Image (cartoon, rainbow, N blue to C red; front, side):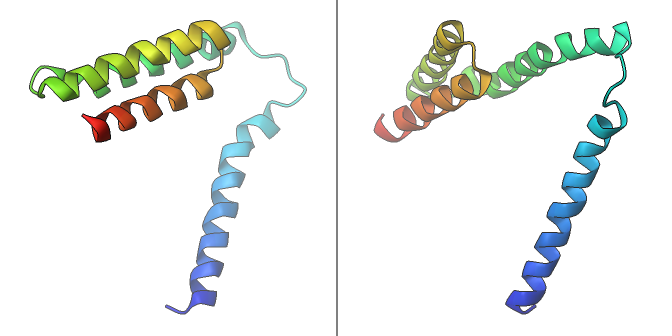
Length: 106
């Protein structure tokens, strides 16, 4: 595959993905959300974070001491940053960076 063909294919994938992701927002623009949809919008982000926490810490039982320390420090740091800044992206990014740094240093 040539570079131009790959660039065209990548651009097409980006456009199609952007279209499908923006379609619900375009369809619901200007309309009042139902109470159940509003409730789902409130409950879904913390639920996803809880699932990610459980999934990412499942290896704490079988891992070595350095893995345990990295996981616990990363999780606690993520929680601390989130409590201080109330920014999910910043919290997850900071916790991930600390986890990766500890994994490489220990």
